[in-house]
Image (cartoon, rainbow, N blue to C red; front, side, top):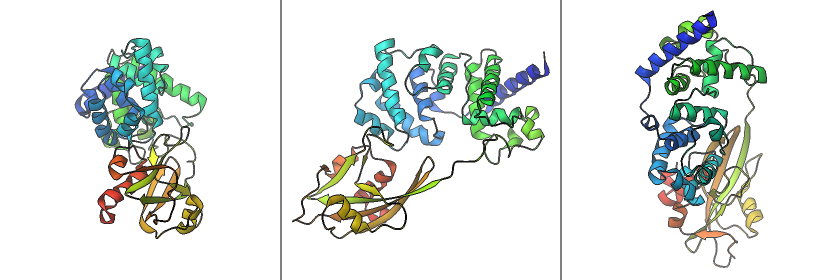
Length: 359
């Protein structure tokens, strides 16, 4: 056995022992249902476990089978996903469910190649499902695992480069293949190590089961690895939104297909980058009428990828002589049943709870 093979074997043994004693008790780990595991993996893409837990539990209550997900209405799919973000994941999940029903008679496919063909599933997610649900020796490589492997093996090149990325996939393959039919536990141990111990900042090296094999730990280079280069600079964006009432109903609109947060609902708004916006002028430009009194609501701040967004919201009521703008005018109880973007859900909360409870 070569030194590299001995290192791989030691890493696998230590990870499996550590995971057996330290794995978090997560609901999708209590089942081998491939559908439930698939849903968890889609939700966990770019989202933390603590955020996903209530969404996964609600989804599984409402749509417990592939068939249920396939036939659910688009409104229900988006409502169940409301607040989780990256909504294309939900739409792809339903498209994949419909394909499974049509092509695989409602049974989630067990072959890696068939899983990879489904919408919204890339190499990592296909590997995660194959190994966790079916205990197959399929490798995984996401941001967490990439960080773990670059540190353990002291890889200082950009992990996103083609050559280095291929090397990391090869190392992930060697690890899972050396796991002696413990593929599910091995891949989950890599995920768990990245989530709990091998953190991006301030890694908990004292509690790491593979610190003896870790080059970054032994050379004091955990802060340098992975070498991902310069971060994409953040961009500030400003929006003004209006909570417009007319005869007990409120004006809302649905975001079109092909844009961020497609199909979700929101209040009328416009982007006004630069200095603080003149809300009255913005209102007139949007609705073509002299604005009534505008009541400012607390500003909502949030982030979407590299954008730092400030949303200024105003509440108003049309005058009797004003012609109501075209659009969807709905009573508050109807609004509650719609899937809103996260920022606009906070505006809706102002309508339901009052200004003192906003945010």
